[in-house]
Length: 421
Image 1: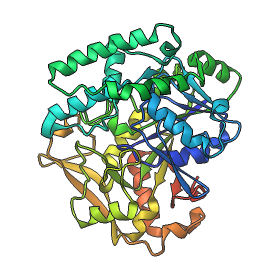
Image 2: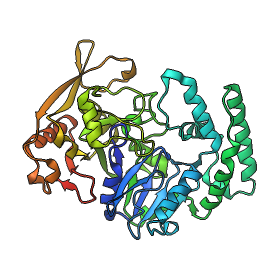
Image 3: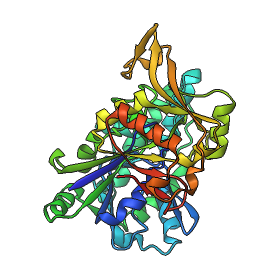
Image 4: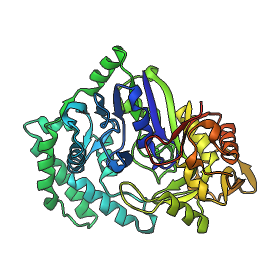
């Protein structure tokens, strides 16, 4: 059986904490897509830890963590992350497995990312410049290098062949070629990567499922950044939705059971692209300040707005969400009133389905507002303690999405999670 946990907005929904909470119910945590542009934030003994590539189950003794074939891996940032985790006393080599089919991010991929984003000028996508997009382009273009390739005797020649191709592209773009200076760290990290267990993950994982092991598949980014169903072209380069776990881990749909969808009780986005419920005023700034809305990976300030139920309903449909999880709900304690976007006004028509061409569409959000809660949500420990105003917001969310809210996170602490169902 496989349960999946993924984001329903533009990423940064607080998925890491929820994976960390649910992990005790599983034997395996598997990451199925994305790269080090993801940042899952955990708190261990009140110390903040940000994971970028390694699954969020590494701090649970006896649990196996799998990096699936759908992930792209930067050996340098991977090694840095491993060293950080080891500093907390974790024997990572005993609990981490890596698919031999996962693709490698090269120094030249990062150079291409920088050159491509620079060439777009004011039409920048908002890339994290970590080489994710160019790596996925090489993957689909059948040029990429995979983790299993580092074990081949001719790996360096394969590397040089792909590097030369990238250098020609950079030359054609009249872009800076600064690849050589990053190569020593890259090859040092590749050697360190060889010390971890590199496996035929699809065979191993299917064997574990046949034996009755429970797996939690962990997504990165969010549904609205999905390459097919997100706000294209302002999206990431992988499938962030439930369907992505099948291709990103090599398992059949029959194994999928619960789908936990994570959404903030408001909405944020990093980078460019449409954001219908964005608040470009003092209220949006207040949400950012109170919520400490700065990217876990990039440090960039996040754009903030009220929860968008049109987009959330769409995300629940695409993913087949069975359980909704609301995070950072306590941030709303400080707001004088709380809004929820219930529909869009487009060309004088009320629209409740998320539009395909939203980047070319002028959208006016329609809001329902709730008065300030009569007591702080952050002080609640049980479902019956939740204030009336927030209960009304939950009811509206469930009504519009057709999915029950199962958990409410009301603080950063590991124990600050209220089970509603």
